[in-house]
Image (cartoon, rainbow, N blue to C red; front, side, top):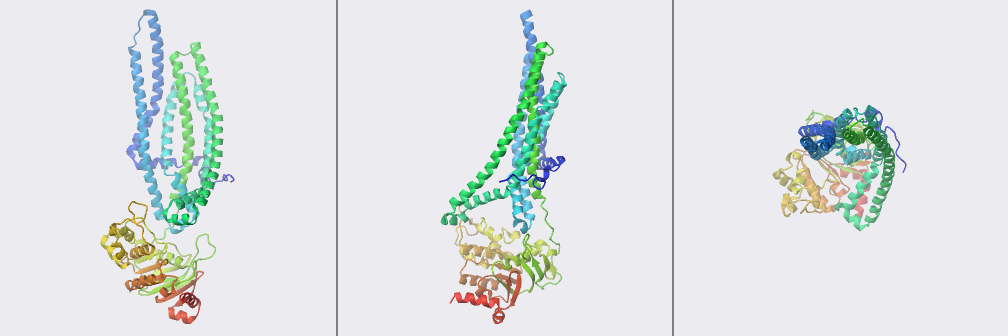
Length: 613
């Protein structure tokens, strides 16, 4: 695998130096809005922890010089006053205790903020997902954005804030160290700062390389996550075991890991090697200053206590410089990763919802007028110049081969997609001008791949109408209409029975029972006058499907119904049948009319009928 190109497209945040920390303000705002009290305590403890280390060094100097003076006095007079020294020792112990307390408080604030911010950011990611269109979820590049945002961004804001506060703390410490060190020589301050720069430059460089590698290999990381799902989920377990896919998929999982690990190992070795080599410069600077201060004490330019203080200040100052530069490098890296979160959160979503709740021609029904649609990135249109009219009380059946555009037509009707050209009207009003809630209340849909939620039975049905999600009376009414009541009454806890195997005491249903749950879900919307069945009974036998559709037709009299099925014995029940071929509407009419026409429908019907003879 070649290294990812170092272009602005792969790493937009590093395009300009001033952009490196553009997300720091946002991270601080996140902390502030998450918990102002914790943020204020965090800031106060950071200030305390930054000032006090210099005080320890200064008190240490006074203790050493006091001890030296006491020794000299004892040698001359045979006694010495040690009370001042003991008070200084007690004072230093108190300051050290305050430092320990402030550090413990900082750790506590970090732990609490980590939990609060993790939840806050996960909610932001999920809330954004609710605003996205279906096209986003069918786009592989969008899934890469989502994967990157969820993997790292939930922890990076707190890391960025922690490093920011740590930088402030070390900056305060360095300022206080500098005030004391400059009394010895201004050059010591310059040496202190310059010694850590080479290592910092190496860290910053490799942080950028690591981030570019992270972004570039998102598809492979997503494949790893998918393989984990296939190998460890009950809905894949049967085929994985039956077809002995486990070893093959596990081998592929290992191969992806080995490939990614090889890249990580190479980058880690380079990063640590350069970091060690350049870190020796800082070590040399410290020991050069160490010798200088020691010689000054020997010459009598400074006292023994001052020598102890300066050495301690230089050692702590070097640690503070290293920590500060490391924090800056880490902040740079956190900013890079936070770009993933905000790149996802700032995903543009075109506003398509209107405000109108009724059309100018009530009772006109649904009209498709020269509707065409192409999926993003597709060269062939999924639908082309489709026109049809469905009036209240009419039933429409859509017939065609897989991929002909039948389900696409339903997605356009339910406004999951917007037509590329043409328009769809409901009661004389373009769908794009309808209020979203008002439009969705008019439509009840069951797709072939309907959701099988790991919820209670009643909640699975209630999902069809969020306004009545927990309405038990509506559950029972919908279950009765969806032909699910009979088997639900036999379950141990009826509508309170947990479905699926993810949770304790969960019950798994048969395919036919799940389909009846989905049918009941569609009947939750009592106001819906457009009912759509998109092959939800595909796994049922012909007799069971015919029974369900006959029941469905009886309950939906006076409403507009759209049926998609490959079984022509069911399709022939519809008032109007439309044949779609490669996105074109090629035939329409009743069963009898289309059979007389002798076209594609008649051929397919005869072909299927032959199979039952």
